Image (cartoon, rainbow over all chains, first blue to last red):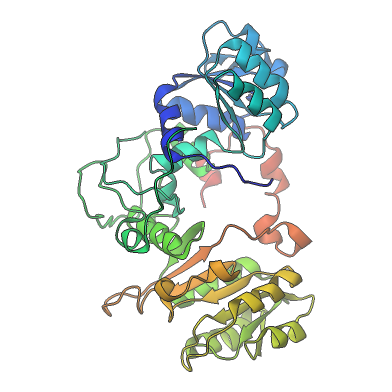
Amino acid sequence: MQDDLAYLDNDLARIYREVRVIAMVGASPSWNRPSHFVLKYLQGKGYRVIPVNPAAAGKEIQGERVYATLAEVPDPVDLVNVFRNSEAAGPITDEAIAKGARVVWMQLGVRNDAAAARARAVGLTVVMHRCLKIEYGRLFGELSWAGVNTGVISSRRPRSSR
Amino acid sequence: MSEAPKPPFGFETRAIHAGARPDAATGARQTPIHQTTSYVFENVDHAADLFNLSTFGFVYTRLGNPTVAVLEERLASLEGGRAAVAAASGHAAQFIAFFTLLQPGDEFLASRNLYGGSITQFGQSFKKLGWTCRFCEPTAEAFRAALSPRVKAIFVESLANPGGVVVDLEAVSAVAREAGVPLVVDNTLASPWLCQPFAWGADLVIHSTTKFLCGNGSSMGGVLIESGKFDWRKGDKFPGVAGPSRPTTASTSTRPSVTSASP
């Protein structure tokens, strides 16, 4: 996927600071699927992650009940994480707008410019083709543990992480 | 989304700070020497997540160490690469690179103007593993003429030691790109201050950190840095890098025990 997208570290960090509840559309109950371990990782960072997946509706993933659609999630949602393909990201973005989410975040390999424009037009923040787990690790120091060039330089003592 | 981006950090800033932060536990400003082989887990679940590579963290110093990670990120940053892995010497870094790229029976092309140790490693030691190095004049024309379907990489020194030969990295990288193989550049003598091979099309950069990067003659080391731009899946030449995990691993739906997942 062509990556001409650019997001400022400060903007991404603000999303992580302000968001509390994430709805993950496409969350898998299988432990070895990326959506599953991204969900688990984010829980470990203190976020509540509500899984949305019609194929697993009614089951639980990491202690959270799975809903068939975003509309069925009973609680308010700050961020909708799209773990589906770029085409599916269109209707999911519209559901995220209807749900009152403030951020739509499409995973690595997922990009839908038309949907992003609709969301931005009504004041949502949109991130595309980025991983919610990788960017957290990159901004807050954990990705550095693997020798990755994070581009982040900080003189602050990091908060202890789990 | 908001205000103008901060200007990128300069080379000097990154040479001092990239990869290092104050220590989370103690606030130590300089990077502590983490003299440990192993790391504790919070519980079995945490250990399983680490071994499954589904969370970030340290397991065993052969796989990663907080002090070494600072060196790795710093050199990845100075070279403009994606990520780095450090080794005990430049020779070890070269071994890691070719062990990853080559199968027995494979070949690679290398400049004949190389550090003597590399001539011996490539021309003699590697034969034991069934790898053949063909030495060429370090020009685009000579490398193009020497290509064959078995060739999996082209190796040059950006500034040759000895001889000081300056290789036209841009022209050689074009040959590598046409052939679908990575250009591997030993940038030891130039250092990233004088030359950043990724800017000229290199795919992997190697250093003996023993020389200029250490700078005081006290410590041996090496590093292998990847640009992050080479498509390892293209052309099916690098199954060891791009291939799927073993079918048994990929299809299992039950969590493996920590012992069965250990390296």
